[in-house]
Length: 251
Ligand SMILES: N[C@@H](CCC(=O)N[C@@H](CS)C(=O)NCC(=O)O)C(=O)O
Image (cartoon, rainbow, N blue to C red):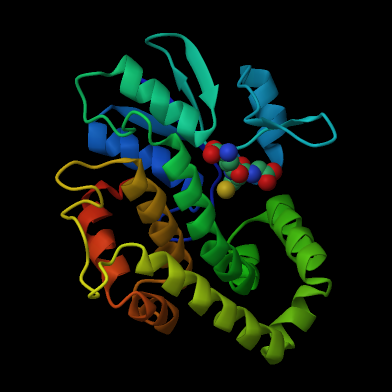
């Protein structure tokens, strides 16, 4: 059995991180049995050290950065962190399941990831107070401090600052529109289908769908924000979301 490490929120899906959603989508698409172990965001480093789970990155100052997702696979006694490394491992160790990462696509996936992250970052900032309200205790304080450091003002000032919010929405619109334009032909039609690269699911679907999941979880599916974001893509995001929804399950 695989244990998937994630941090809890009070959003209805409990899970919010787009990086964790990528791995969970991969596990669900592959039909690999797993269970989630919830670790408060502020406790990730301490708990991972206890469990001998590796950091996903080394920070510029040389210290390790412990992040979710991470997995422990007891069938092979393997511990891995970093969404891409985990999905590479799942493809390799579970070869009779749908293969997510196509050979030679890591550079393209990294570019797609970066592009979509530009839009998600603006949305993450705009949703900061909502995220802070949906993460508990010390983890909530951590998010608040991060938000305040980036915006250079208190969260209360940010909530009042309609001019900054309008500017961020305009930037988000531009970034979301650019990302959705990559999926269209020159005459405006959506290319490919049913998945982005044709008949089989690939990493590009999971990068995109996990970003959409993050947006839907935070904004709420019936919200004006989600309708606005989906509208900028002329319904492309909601079509991708419908395709991925059967795999939007937390175990
Ligand atoms: N490169 C990592 C990035 C994962 C990541 O940044 N995870 C965030 C949650 S969305 C995290 O755990 N951050 C820990 C922290 O901020 O202390 C991956 O692809 O898995």
